[in-house]
Structures are given as structure tokens and as C-alpha cells.
Length: 114
View (cartoon, rainbow, N blue to C red):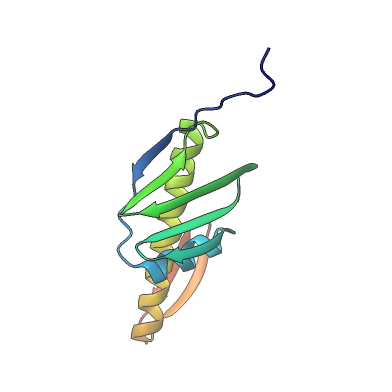
């Protein structure tokens, strides 16, 4: 009986299309992830929905080890990243144009032009 186990780790991709890395970093940080940028890739890790996530965004795609993450978890993570990115884009636009923003509920805000 061998004293080692061989675990095959496979990687999968999910399309994200986040064009601005700076806004993506802010969105991932707001979700509680630790983010590191390495050239054209963003590596991030943290806990999402009770699961340890260690993934990266490369060439517009979310790359992750699918041995440890279920499809439902990836769908929830992808949606959370997209929502966070959208909120970050709206906040950045509000700051740039001098608009006032006010949270009106869960994932809702009112933007007022001055």
C-alpha cells in the first residue's frame, strides 16, 4: 500500500468581463477578499458563504480549482462579484460627476445630481 495519495486538481473558467482592474480590486476588497495584481491577472482569496475561495481573474475570466467548489457556489460568487463591480462603477461615476448617493435598501441606492 503506497504511503501517498495523488489528487488531480483541475481548473475551470467562468466569463466575468471586468474591464477596469482598479474597480475590480475595490469590488473584491469590499466583498472581503485579499487581492493581489500580477500583470494581467488578479489573484484573490478569502471566505465566501462559509467556503474558502482561492481564485483569480485572468483575461476576463474567473479561474478556479473546481475540485473544491460547487457549481452553485461559483454562480453565487460570480453574481456577487458582478454586483460588487456594478456598485463600485456607480460609486466611482457619482464621485467623478459630483453626484450624491444614498443607500435606499439592499443593493439599491438613489443618485442625485447636484
